[in-house]
Length: 259
Length: 186
Figure 1 (cartoon, each protein chain N blue to C red):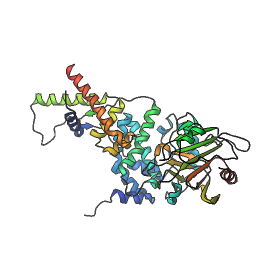
Figure 2 (tube, one colour):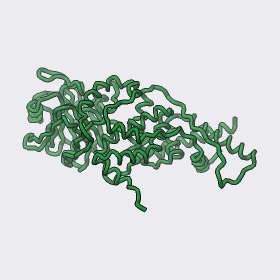
Figure 3 (cartoon, rainbow over the protein chains, first blue to last red):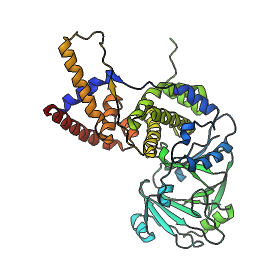
Figure 4 (cartoon, rainbow over the protein chains, first blue to last red):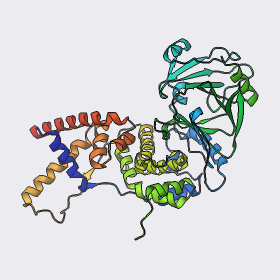
């Protein structure tokens, strides 16, 4: 029986003689793609999720405007979020077609009581909406993340983007690290707001890109999705995101009713 | 001699919207990215699409690349993720078909024809065993030994935590050893 070390040596010995398929000239093609975004290779349309993504593509194409340049518009450690302005949003990652939790990358479904037992901080629930229809928990951020899902109700319609009326995500941020990133295209606006005396931001307009970062702050490509209007603020150490096809007034009303 | 720009210089230029700088980054990494995608998808056409799409996505996400970070794992993670999505949505498991180009390398001691034939057969058999492993085993072995990725890069390419690479590699090698042993007895 060959020793593992010998096997490793033999495997490494194969390397110089491996016959790889010829690497295509990607550099030139990628250059062409980034210079004229919106040109999509036919083969891309052949994949199964392409149909669903095609609608988004139309949207993305509308965001394409001028020569790419990017500007970091905000990077608040207190909100654990990197926000950057880009001229074209990256295409969202294909999502599994399962539950809301899977589609939006919210983690595992649980109950409010269970979630309360899993975190050391107080989960805020908006009095204006009452108890959520679904609750999700995930352990990505060090102290966990809890998402409250609200389906449509009078005056609040489900968003075509997320499939839920209101999504509230709470994460406790005692550690100075970035957990989230947001990329805003030219047709999204960012506005500073105050929620119960706390600094926050209101992002509205065309959908923007939302993604998680890993512990080192690197972009986790697989988590990228498009997000609709979002209010984000820091409520005494808990970062709250309220997302939905909401007006600013609706989002602020929900935010101020959190307790 | 005027040195060529470092990766770091190219990344900061590309982050400022310099497309030519990004083209150069792609040129530097297209081989390893394409081959990584090939190992994952087992198809040159899918690997080409995945690598191209991955590089375009990475460009759009350049704002999230941290100054001073290693570009290889960052790029490989995005490209490999594209490759996995393609492999998944194609709904099939490709058989990897890596082959050996047998050629006489200058500087080799000229072996006897019999010894050369034997060595070549052994090597092809070993590669055949690797090709026939489960995707998980094959991917980690190919990443480490054929693509020469380090632990961090392998983790990025396979989409697993870096701490898992070592144990996965060790299990894969044990299974490969078993195959080799069984093959020798057969």
